[in-house]
Structures are given as C-alpha cells and as structure tokens.
Image (tube, rainbow, N blue to C red; front, side, top):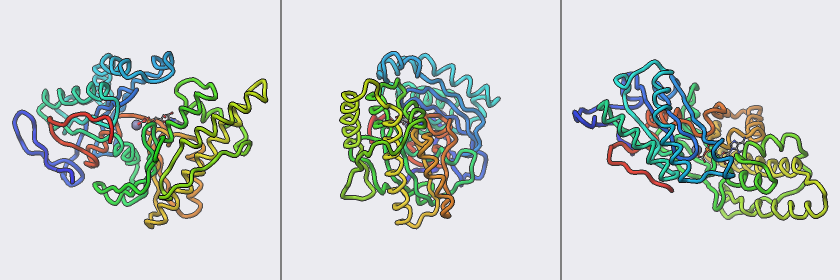
Length: 350
Ligand code: KG4
Ligand code: ZN
C-alpha cells in the first residue's frame, strides 16, 4: 500500500499528500518514458493548470520508429524548456509546488533517467517531496483529469507496450483481470501499419486510413485463449501479413484502406467484447479507456455506444490519451502506483 506521508529531502519535514491531506495539492510532474518530453502542473489530481508536451515524432520519422539513444538525447535537449514552460503557463514558481513527480517506469531506461533526475533535482532544489510514478497507473488516472470519475470501475488499458483489463476497486487498489500474452494493441497497430506501408507513427495513420475503408472486406482471426479475458495479437499480425502478401500478388495496387478497416474492426470488436464481459463479471457499470490507443476513433465509437445500454463510459480527452505529464501528476496525487523517495530507481519492465 503506498504511503501518504512524505518527507522533504533537506529539512526532513513530514507532509501528507493525497485526497485525505485536507489542503490543495499542487503537483508538478514530468513524463519522459518514450518519445514525448512532457511537464505539467495539476491541482488536486483533476484540475490541469499547465500541460506541455514536446513530441519527438519529427525526429523519429527519419528512422521509422523510436531509437532509444536518439530519444534520450532529445529528452535532454527538451527537458529544461518544457519544465520552464509548465511553470510559466500556470503562473507558478517552485515554492508553490506541493511535490515533484516523474515517471520511473516502465519505459526506455535512458529516457526515464532524464525525466526522473530532473524531477529529483527540482525536489532537492525546492525542498519538496519526490514521487516516482508508474506509467501504467498514470494512464488510467488520465480519466480523472477534468472529470468527476470515482472508483470502482473497470479499465481497459491499451498502449504501445501494454494491454490490460483492470479492476479499479479504489484509488489505491487495482487488480489485473486479463492481459495480452504477446503483443500489445498499440504494437500490433504499429506493425500492421508498417506492413501496409504507412509512415511512423503507425497507429494514428492506420486509424485515419481505416475510416475510408470497408471494415468487413476481409475476415481476420480472433485468438481463443484459456483465460477469456486475456488477449493475443500475434496471430492477427501474422494473418494480416499473409493477407497483404496474397493481395500484393493479386493486385497492382494494395487495397490498403480495406485492410486497415478490417484490422481495426477485428481489434475493436475483440476489445469491446472482452472488456464488457469482464465489467459484467465484476458488476461494474462504469468502463474507462486508457492509453495511447484509447485515442482510436473506432474503439471510442464502439465503447461510447455502450452508453445506450446503461453503462457509464469514460475516455480521456485526446491529448491525455497519449503520453503526457498531467496524468503523472494525477497519479501522484491519488497515490496510485507511486514510489516515494529520492532513492527510487527507474525500471524498464513490470
Ligand atoms: O500510451 P502511449 O502514448 O505510449 C505508451 O505508453 O506506449 O501509446 C502509444 C501507442 C502507439 O502504439 C500508437 O501507435 C498508438 O498508441 N496510437 C494509436 C492511435 N493513437 C496512438 N493506435 C490506434 N489508433 C490511434 N488513433
Ligand atoms: Zn504511455
């Protein structure tokens, strides 16, 4: 169970943080786990006072994906500017901050180190607690930004590295109901996008193309698994590859939009079916989407349609679906997946 009592690093004063603290918490957070350098200031886990994101997309387009060493160097170049902008946008100074937070994992180690060390340096400079945050918990907490959502609920976390159905029992208690046994949804999107010949970042480009195609043009397989709430996307990826190879032989031009739409239809209907069943299983009437792939148009459409059946559906605003620091600040406030000391180290995997 995460602690609610934190120590200041220089004066060793005790500070209570979180919803039970009884005063306004102003969290400054940094995110640098992959290809965005981000800083944000959030009041009481919900009210975004500033949100700055420097994307490395332009650099990574050249390489067709994220090269870890290149990403770390870009974070180093951007971090001080992004931090200064976050303070400026909010009109606040270091003294006004309750605690400094940063993502400590999972992610690219070199990239994480840049953000975490900047966060620790700020905490030392202003004698405020440092809170290390788990990136996955933070994606779920993105749903608290500018909303009144409260646990319990079922969450579907779909990002570039993870795919999980989670039972969120309280702000502090989470249980994984099911997860992918191979590729993450975002990874499958990015790989199939590359097979079709779409540029990085694959997921969002495939989404756009799919909107112009026929979702029922091709039947793609859905994995059957022992735990009905687990996922597998490697078979779908292979089937997409075989379909593309076959169609390339038969056609002078690849029917890319129909392939993209059929892939998107298979993925979105699988996610919907399993998540709804898992939610029913734990009697949850509130379902929450989280992670970069929660920005997907078809997935959002299918889940939002459940509102007609009496479910409450939440998904973060687009800018809070993909990596950002506001969700890290929210997670730090609600103390979900936090590690609170200057001794905390980065980690690459769960
Ligand atoms: O959460 P995120 O920003 O980073 C990780 O923590 O992994 O997720 C990035 C993933 C990438 O795989 C990206 O292609 C995917 O989210 N993504 C999308 C869309 N926007 C981002 N996938 C499908 N449709 C989208 N609109
Ligand atoms: Zn992420």
